[in-house]
Image (cartoon, rainbow, N blue to C red; front, side, top):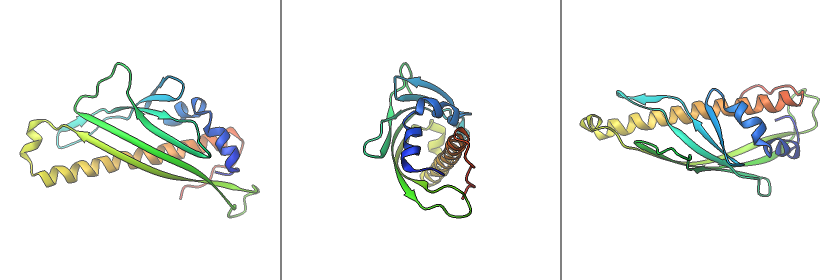
Amino acid sequence: MYATPEVVAEYLDHHEQWFPRSAKPMQVKPIGKTGYALILGRFGALGFELEPKIGLDLLPQDHGVYRINTIPVPGYVPFGYDVDFQAQLSLLGAPVQGDIPIPQMTNASWTLDLTVWVQFPSFIHLLPEKFVQQTGDAVLEQIVRQISRRLTRKVQEDFHLSRGLPVPKMF
């Protein structure tokens, strides 16, 4: 992002302003002061589909480190799946590359620990276990990659446009 880590942190600290905009087209509903219920979309394979909903708590920064943890969605019981999402984001200052008239930029370093449990219907168990595992892993990888890239890009765009800055090209 074309700004100092302090400016980016100020933006990230007010997630109630940017997160609902940036998460679209996912449906977003607030849960308390720092949490959100997200409907991720419809996903599936092998004739089995889910429309997962997850609760995420965007915790306040702790010495420049942001954490996002799974929280329960009030009144919702996931049927046939469970997700444990634990993410951490650190902001790192970096020199600007190229001909951008901005003194400093900020890079974000992400780590994600994601555990997903899915209870398949009985007809899926007729298929070879290795095939089901590979298919499930591929679908999960697609979901994470698709949502992560889209959300990252939309947050970048929202940040830059809200400050009248040029939007960086995607790498």
